[in-house]
Image 1 (spheres, rainbow, N blue to C red):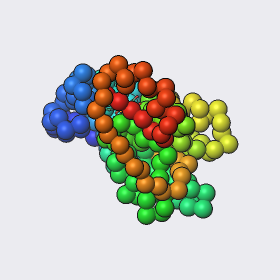
Image 2: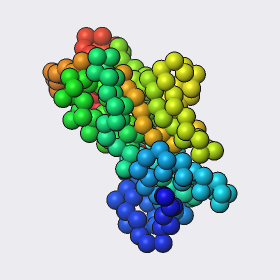
Image 3: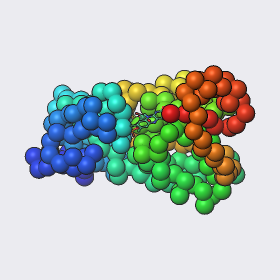
Image 4: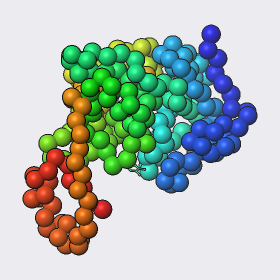
Length: 229
Ligand SMILES: Cc1cc2nc3c(=O)[nH]c(=O)nc-3n(C[C@H](O)[C@H](O)[C@H](O)COP(=O)(O)OP(=O)(O)OC[C@H]3O[C@@H](n4cnc5c(N)ncnc54)[C@H](O)[C@@H]3O)c2cc1C
């Protein structure tokens, strides 16, 4: 039986000891009343039901990389660090189901051995899958959608503690959760449509700002992925 952990003792969520937690950019500081680290769907559902019984709210957090207060809560925090890893595969279809708290940097090591890859990624890979999908984290390249477009299924625990399994044919629900802004429930796992594994050839160069802006429209059509900063 899973019991809700009360954070009377220090917690190290986001690497900051104590009850006050900070996001990566140090733009947000939160003081959740409790932090819990469920390990599976049943435990997430138990947390939500416990929160309901106490008339409080829950908020799932990923890697805490959002600059805004979108992951902030002063109520119960669900730390998704244990909802990680490869759960299921359908290699012939190029589909994998991963724990929602899997960090993007972990994904290649899990799916490259299957001959699969995510078609597009953002600028960094520290985010969790659920965090990136929930905020519609984008990558680069005019021919590629953001991370939410790679989602073809998910398991979500709703605000009533019920478990919703969303498949590729549940188009409206898929559109609602990817991106769902963390507002519709707790994602436990996410199924991605992958592509065959591929190598990238990267070219990095220094140019002046005016050229980078002037040539942008041309450059994005010449390569798969283009970015400047
Ligand atoms: C250095 C840096 C570079 C970045 N580069 C890019 C980029 O190239 N492209 C881009 O688009 N964005 C970029 N971002 C933004 C980043 O991708 C998003 O803020 C992303 O949401 C962070 O993921 P996270 O795991 O930290 O989620 P968090 O910030 O922890 O949470 C984000 C949202 O997801 C929700 N959430 C998290 N886990 C769950 C779950 N299991 N169930 C339901 N909801 C959940 C939270 O409640 C919250 O609403 C960058 C951010 C940084 C700091």
